[in-house]
Image (tube, rainbow, N blue to C red; front, side, top):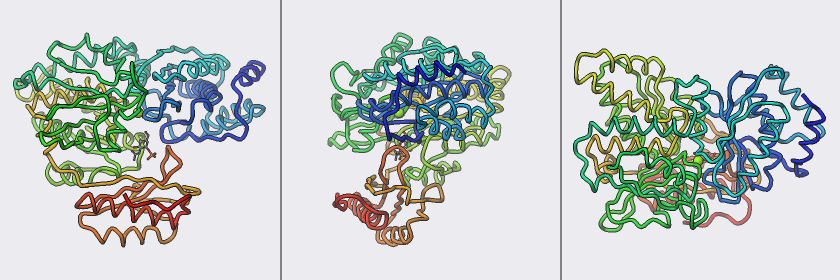
Length: 542
Ligand SMILES: CC(=O)N[C@H]1[C@@H](OP(=O)(O)O)O[C@H](CO)[C@@H](O)[C@@H]1O
Ligand SMILES: [Mg+2]
């Protein structure tokens, strides 16, 4: 390591005095002006990680659905997964080290993680469309160069595209070609193969309006358009030419406020969807003839995909183990539908994509979605091999055709991470193949009315949870109070947990009516305020 270069370059990316940040659920996220030293140091860390695992590592500059002024950075592991939890701690240490200690901290990480500094290193870089992203990605490159590694800067890409590139690179092209063209070709080919087999979609069925949150999704979808057949009629809104990123639009806005985004004129019964700022989340929605808004969230997306896959799996008769993975935020009626009507096992894990991804890897076919629309499907290697073999060798027509559809699903879904573009194509293909309208999809089950609130407390770490975050262990008395409040309502459920991305405690409640869900959420938020050290004025009724 060139100590002099490290000193010189870290001085160009100084750490603001007293600032400490944590590598959280989605990497580092804060105001863009506080991030320069962080991204420089994540460039350093990406090199260390690359040397440790002898593979290409990804680094993405984005703050997803957060306001345009924010930014963030996260690392991508060799197969396109999130950074391994054991390294999150190193990331935090490196980010918070004083400048004069930087070299020492690097050496400590090398020792703890058995990094051989003489090995080669390679990093792929991507960024979203925020005004601050370009400069920050230059600082990443400074970090990479100080420790001496190769890099490829993909420039503007969606988060899932970068995950895809990393996976392609480290599987020597088995997953696909590590170029944007490779991504577009792989997805569009699988999509076209799938919809070839659909008979029943009239023209009106093929229109889809997409709110791109004024972000990177708009750019990349426009690039991808020429790869689609003419029958695909997608209309891009909020493309970033007029309004601000994520402002009153995007998947997070639509899910949280349960209303349509600005900038998209929606006619009754038109199928619409929203991406988030880095295009790794998607939610669907429509307005009925009475003008009521209907949200189709990640839970209903997981349900649609599960129905489709379960039918195909029954046809190929392979006894593949399939399961759905959710978090505590999944609507109670989605869980009930999946378990009782569809008879698919459902598992609940802690919030955060890495937890869902990890659990889904236990099955031959693991469908995972967060209610907010981040999700994908994982196929085990054994299942994939068997399916590809059936496509080549199976004599029975029905079985072979089902295997072909599964094979195309494997190629269409981005198995590295949730991907709005890929998920959208999966959904569009399923709707076309099953001849389902957006209303019919929505009608699979009715969401239980629910409410998500947040409360500020002095220190959110006073709340400790268990049972996939569904029960609070501390502070004393809180869970007992929640239990008592929940008993007052029908079909009710409530839980609280400290957020991993914001300095707040989140409260979730559902019940038989919206009034009851709102009342329960409010009462629970008061309990949190009083028992967990609430800050400022007590929460007001909704
Ligand atoms: C209730 C909710 O939507 N929580 C989100 C949010 O996490 P919190 O830990 O709740 O702040 O951001 C995460 C990262 O994007 C996402 O994985 C998660 O689902
Ligand atoms: Mg995102």
